[in-house]
Image (cartoon, rainbow, N blue to C red; front, side, top):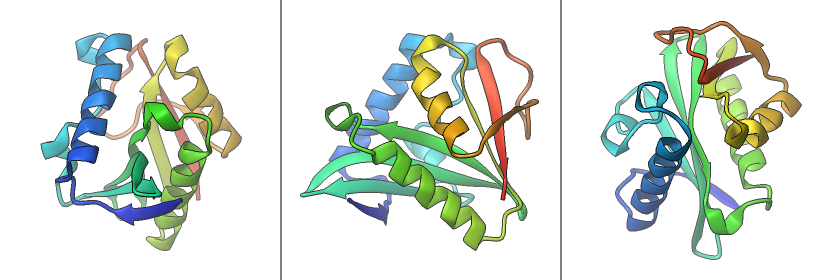
Length: 151
């Protein structure tokens, strides 16, 4: 697997982000969807990476700088054809390592509370994230859970 910075203009990533947003809409009410569309992912405070193998897009992930010591994990997604191949684990580790390179003290995330998000929550727990109150601009929402990891 190769993880590389992405400018969000290729047809493969445009399709995967569409799949990601569609998946969020299937499992979350509109007011509880915090996934970012392509334009919002292109903001300067967000770094975006894709995972490739043999010319095929396997997944993606992003890191948003909240402040000089705190980052937020965004847009973690594994392409449907590549589930259970270690893609999410690889991109998560890459983003954790990048957050450490930036000297962030904390990395946080928001994910869904529904059953469909259980595999993601288990992955985050296995990687040292623990549940926390809402951070940044988030508010309490029974459809969301918030997690953080001290770096």
